[in-house]
Amino acid sequence: MATVEDFYKLRDTEDYFRFFNIDFDQSLINVKRFHMMKEYGTLIKKGIGTITDENKLLEFLKFSLLRVYGDYKNGHAPSAADVWNMYETGKLEGCSSCGTTGTSTGGSCGC
Image 1 (cartoon, rainbow, N blue to C red):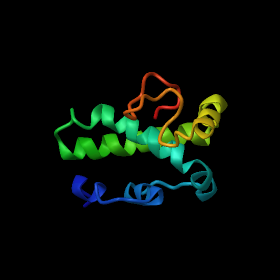
Image 2 (cartoon, rainbow, N blue to C red):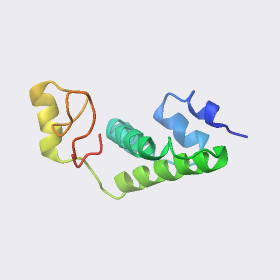
Image 3 (cartoon, rainbow, N blue to C red):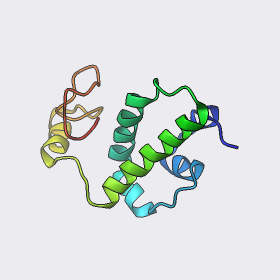
Image 4 (cartoon, rainbow, N blue to C red):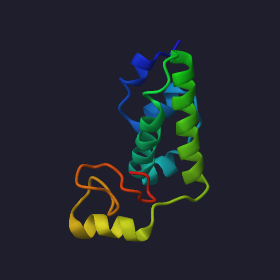
Protein backbone atom coordinates (compact mmCIF):
# COMPACT_ATOMS: atom_id res chain seq x y z
CA MET A 1 0.00 0.00 0.00
CA ALA A 2 1.23 3.48 -0.89
CA THR A 3 2.13 5.84 1.95
CA VAL A 4 2.60 9.59 2.31
CA GLU A 5 6.29 8.86 2.86
CA ASP A 6 6.36 7.17 -0.58
CA PHE A 7 4.63 10.23 -2.05
CA TYR A 8 7.37 12.55 -0.77
CA LYS A 9 9.98 10.46 -2.62
CA LEU A 10 8.40 11.11 -6.03
CA ARG A 11 10.36 13.32 -8.42
CA ASP A 12 9.05 13.17 -11.99
CA THR A 13 5.59 14.30 -13.06
CA GLU A 14 4.88 10.87 -14.52
CA ASP A 15 5.76 9.28 -11.16
CA TYR A 16 2.89 11.15 -9.49
CA PHE A 17 0.41 9.82 -12.03
CA ARG A 18 1.75 6.27 -11.72
CA PHE A 19 1.73 6.50 -7.92
CA PHE A 20 -2.01 7.20 -7.97
CA ASN A 21 -2.72 4.88 -10.93
CA ILE A 22 -4.02 7.76 -13.04
CA ASP A 23 -3.94 7.42 -16.82
CA PHE A 24 -2.34 10.41 -18.50
CA ASP A 25 -1.58 11.79 -21.94
CA GLN A 26 2.21 11.87 -22.27
CA SER A 27 2.09 14.56 -24.96
CA LEU A 28 0.09 16.86 -22.64
CA ILE A 29 2.55 16.22 -19.81
CA ASN A 30 5.48 16.96 -22.12
CA VAL A 31 4.05 20.38 -22.99
CA LYS A 32 2.39 21.46 -19.72
CA ARG A 33 4.42 19.75 -16.95
CA PHE A 34 5.93 22.93 -15.49
CA HIS A 35 2.63 24.78 -15.10
CA MET A 36 0.70 21.71 -14.00
CA MET A 37 3.17 20.82 -11.27
CA LYS A 38 3.41 24.42 -10.02
CA GLU A 39 -0.37 24.58 -9.81
CA TYR A 40 -0.48 21.16 -8.14
CA GLY A 41 2.07 22.30 -5.56
CA THR A 42 0.08 25.44 -4.82
CA LEU A 43 -3.14 23.48 -4.47
CA ILE A 44 -1.76 20.84 -2.11
CA LYS A 45 0.00 23.44 0.08
CA LYS A 46 -3.43 24.82 0.94
CA GLY A 47 -4.65 21.54 2.42
CA ILE A 48 -1.65 19.42 3.29
CA GLY A 49 -1.14 20.83 6.78
CA THR A 50 -4.76 20.43 7.83
CA ILE A 51 -5.31 16.72 7.11
CA THR A 52 -3.91 14.36 9.73
CA ASP A 53 -5.35 11.02 8.58
CA GLU A 54 -2.93 9.42 6.09
CA ASN A 55 -5.63 7.82 3.93
CA LYS A 56 -7.55 11.10 3.66
CA LEU A 57 -4.32 12.92 2.85
CA LEU A 58 -3.53 10.47 0.04
CA GLU A 59 -7.08 10.92 -1.29
CA PHE A 60 -6.64 14.70 -1.16
CA LEU A 61 -3.30 14.48 -3.00
CA LYS A 62 -4.81 12.25 -5.69
CA PHE A 63 -7.93 14.40 -6.11
CA SER A 64 -5.76 17.52 -6.38
CA LEU A 65 -3.66 15.95 -9.13
CA LEU A 66 -6.80 14.84 -10.97
CA ARG A 67 -8.22 18.36 -10.72
CA VAL A 68 -5.12 20.06 -12.08
CA TYR A 69 -4.69 17.49 -14.84
CA GLY A 70 -8.37 17.76 -15.78
CA ASP A 71 -8.12 21.55 -16.00
CA TYR A 72 -5.18 21.35 -18.40
CA LYS A 73 -6.70 18.49 -20.38
CA ASN A 74 -9.77 20.66 -20.89
CA GLY A 75 -7.75 23.59 -22.21
CA HIS A 76 -6.71 25.60 -19.14
CA ALA A 77 -3.51 27.55 -19.60
CA PRO A 78 -1.78 30.38 -17.77
CA SER A 79 -2.35 33.76 -19.36
CA ALA A 80 -0.03 34.65 -22.22
CA ALA A 81 0.88 37.88 -20.41
CA ASP A 82 2.13 35.94 -17.39
CA VAL A 83 4.18 33.56 -19.52
CA TRP A 84 5.62 36.39 -21.62
CA ASN A 85 6.57 38.39 -18.53
CA MET A 86 8.46 35.37 -17.15
CA TYR A 87 10.75 35.40 -20.15
CA GLU A 88 10.93 39.15 -20.53
CA THR A 89 12.02 39.73 -16.94
CA GLY A 90 14.11 36.57 -16.66
CA LYS A 91 12.09 35.58 -13.60
CA LEU A 92 11.62 31.93 -14.49
CA GLU A 93 10.68 30.76 -10.99
CA GLY A 94 7.17 32.19 -11.24
CA CYS A 95 4.82 34.44 -13.15
CA SER A 96 4.46 38.20 -13.08
CA SER A 97 1.86 37.86 -10.33
CA CYS A 98 4.31 36.22 -7.94
CA GLY A 99 6.27 38.06 -5.30
CA THR A 100 10.02 37.81 -5.02
CA THR A 101 9.63 35.14 -2.35
CA GLY A 102 7.83 32.86 -4.78
CA THR A 103 4.51 33.15 -3.02
CA SER A 104 1.42 34.00 -4.97
CA THR A 105 -0.07 37.45 -4.73
CA GLY A 106 -3.31 36.48 -6.38
CA GLY A 107 -2.23 35.56 -9.90
CA SER A 108 -4.42 33.45 -12.13
CA CYS A 109 -1.77 30.85 -12.92
CA GLY A 110 -1.66 29.35 -9.42
CA CYS A 111 2.09 29.55 -8.97
